[in-house]
Length: 112
Image (cartoon, rainbow, N blue to C red; front, side, top):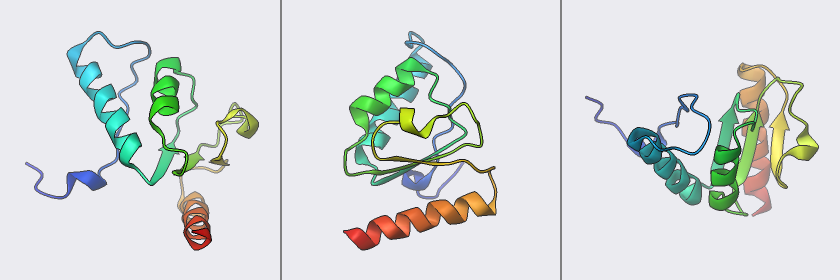
């Protein structure tokens, strides 16, 4: 059993697409919405925003003042198609992308 701080855990999406009818996915989507509403900084790793239901959860739940970073090397993601204020790092999932994300967070914090 994990005894650490659950508030610092990532949320890993299990790959379901669509409106959830299964209680497990309903619970997951509810947790995602609550986590997004309370987050100051959100980093999506490898999420291409092709799931309309998750996109709707994001639209409803992400605060306008939150820093949102998308790390995904996919050429399918057009940064101009992301919601306003989202930053796209088109790198692999490596130290370089983490450093870029860290710098974006530092820059954002220094502007407040």
